[in-house]
Length: 118
Image 1 (tube, rainbow, N blue to C red):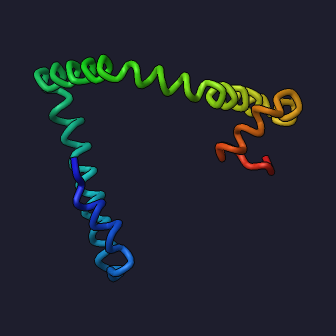
Image 2: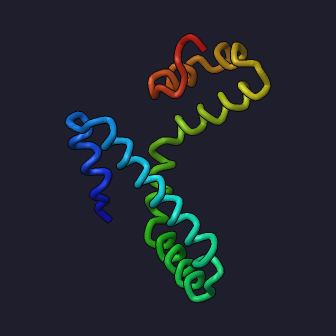
């Protein structure tokens, strides 16, 4: 779905006055809050909506199952490196990770997941 607000904000943010920008951002925040409240107070309790929503998500899963597998296969090394790094980070042993897996460390730097100073 095309969101005119985001398009308008991106195109003309540099040409607007600060007051107008504030007004647009506040309207956007109110719209998000309204939609959030509507879902949590009305739609979530509607059995018909929840049934349709579950069916839609099942169909999406069925249609895009291969995409998820392809993404994982393409990025297997990167995902594995991130997982290993987070494990050593949780244990506060990042230096051990750097010494044990220098190629994974370089891969994470290449993908801007971490910086060299970490």
